[in-house]
Length: 234
Image 1: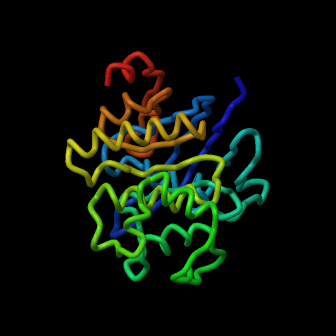
Image 2: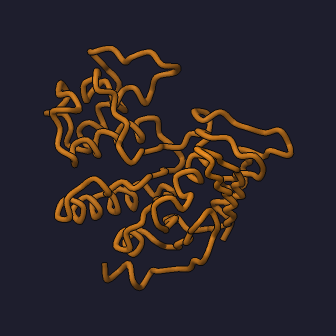
């Protein structure tokens, strides 16, 4: 099969006299790809480079054969133009916007707030599909963890991305809710057939979503492989 992801992410980070060298390289044709490793391993930095939220010092990012970034060639497609749906670990919902506005923000260009009254077919589609319609006027502080996650996911999907990037999407949830939403997300991804990259330190997430797992530690790829048979038992 043709490669979906071809990533060479290299970046040096220095903070409070601590130096971290990120050098992560992988290529995969998996529809569900998991970046797995402990906290501080470099997983989130890698995902942000893929999304265009952080620039690499060297390397490239290619999706389906299209170059999204190549430092040597001077290519850096802006994050919004990469058409990647990104769900942050803390969901990054805007506290001053209600659920409807947060979802509609995924369609905005620039940083203008979405209007309070939104009439857009794609917004309504995901509000209903993810059971958010009854919560449209609620604000993030009024939502449960699962409702916040679904709001962030709807915001990522509303712009019709060509792939989903998920940063520890279940980490803030209790075990029972985590298991249920894990299944819901897996079913949704299968229905949409969107390529997905999920980062996690939880082996249960890796088994559920890991058509292929890339293990990362201390800024380097340390292993990987398919977990299809394990995922089926998760």
